[in-house]
Length: 182
Length: 144
Image (cartoon, rainbow over all chains, first blue to last red):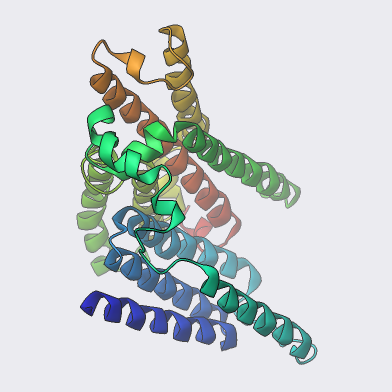
């Protein structure tokens, strides 16, 4: 019960931070708030016992992204330009989509319902046979690296491709500026 | 930020522990939360921290750019290499059971190397992206 309350409070904080990010014009404040957003998210995930995801969120969202965004901020200046006209039409689209998504959640199974389809497919097998078959107590690792090894290979390749893409895009630009490579 | 003695001392104290924690997350991921992805990001974050405090040039000296670029590709190669090793030992691609006479040990071995591959590529990509972004700015370059 306390846990549910804590998660609800954290989600409310997330909503407040989200609105603040949308309203603030100072981009430095936006970057700091998005770091705070990630930390709150990581805390909520930790409260939901998803330690692996919480750790990733804290390191990527709050750590690396904040530094990268600050680096980008240094290049573009720190004040957001005022929009040319009032964003009534985009706002309507966003509100409509949000309501649609909220309506859609009523079709989902209740939170942590053991009878929901996702918990009745392969999850029981992983939980029951995973430690015996792989000898790895952390089921997350067993699923990620062993049962779903192909998927993780794909993910690693995606990270690799993203890195190569960034290198290919940004390195060429730097040479054109005449700054030269290292 | 090079001149701020508090930041420098705190960084010097914290960075070794951050790296140690990353290694713990990497190699203890079988038993506790974590794994290659988290460890790679924590390693990258520790080096980014070093670069923010001591300057990009110092970070480039500590972790040279060719090393980082090799890590980007090396991790994927290690991961796929585990798969090829499974093929060569008579199993399927990414079949860990054949990596050791004892199937459970084989699983351990496969997961260890696969996670190592993930960690190497993730930390390499994160660091490379940071180096490129920071290299385009001015304040990091002033230190060099």
